Length: 327
Image (tube, rainbow, N blue to C red):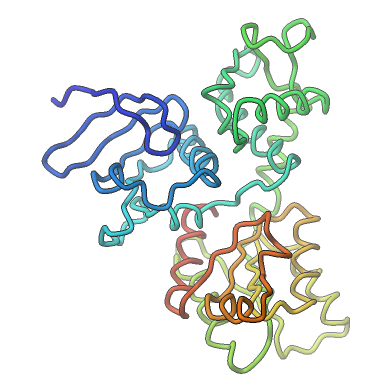
């Protein structure tokens, strides 16, 4: 049996217990911040894809997977051949698998969801919080950001402190009745829906990419998702009204920003207003075209994660991985 070592986590740099399997050079981490995951030796050495702007997001994804007892994953270097199994990811692929909270409201929801899963078997117990190690529960950048989220959750009435005293890390917190109601709301938002709406530009040269999105959505037959795109269909209401109606019924929405059509931005904004999750994509070719014109998709959507695809096969894979991992 391999003895644990103490090594820095390649994501958050915190000292972590690590078991190294020499037969395949896999490092198995148990990090107090990120949780449980594995990494190849190549990834441990070069940390491909990890930077100061995304390391807190990666920590949040790994922490959430640990809390949910999801399949143990292996992080791969960009130079490592890709495996077919969905438990092996490069950082870019991992970032495509979840809905990433981009503002305090979404961070509050993420904290309530994660804290609910963490304490579901001890609902009446007060649980101490550990900001230096638990800031990924809300995908926060650091403990100070995390404490702001905690204080906000308390003010909203979703979290209770011991004897309603000021927040004390030592005495702990618990979800209130309203907090558990919020947990159920977050679970039930269109959870039973098998419909997925596609918001994108409609042009003959883009049909191949719409079909790639459809294939990615519907690839996993066990999940049973069905893509809907309202191109070339006749309805009694306006196309936009029809789109809004279909978005309301959808489990999640795929938004292709290629071409930056105004209607696509309207549909994306409507979706966010409903609290329905979005997978944003755009073509690398279009991104480069905008650069030549000194414009950028990120100018409008800098706070959101956009998955850039190189071709229709790459697009299908992006969508399929996101669906398998998050929905």
